[in-house]
Length: 162
Ligand code: THU
Image (cartoon, rainbow, N blue to C red):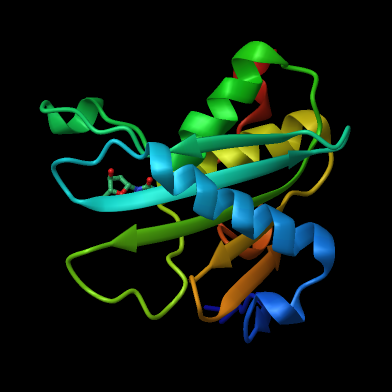
């Protein structure tokens, strides 16, 4: 038996003022995306903003459904918009935020495994790491460079595509 360890690294910022202008704008765009959230079941709004290498910012918000599993997370709504409208676009970063009237969100909301798996696929296709910002409105922001820092044991199987 051999004990092994991963080192996961990320940055923590106290608030928007501490971010560079590019990341600050992206967080504010994620907040803007909250407006289109369709979340009558959970009442938990999630907004995502994706920055492309050419400067464009694509928004997404969670879209729920009365048949619960048919809904989709904000991150995947934004990412699949890009995949279907502009498959050669290169993604630089994604900011995610959340809001609800039911309780106070006082920590950054991190994203689900399904969205991380989808981000990883985009990363592998474009051969460039994606920066992920988890933005708590009026609070801390976490910045993670590359999906490997979020999912070290990611499912990968290159032989499935040859
Ligand atoms: N949700 C997201 O949009 N992104 C995530 O990464 C996790 C959860 C949404 C799905 C659902 O509409 C609501 O948050 C509550 O789970």
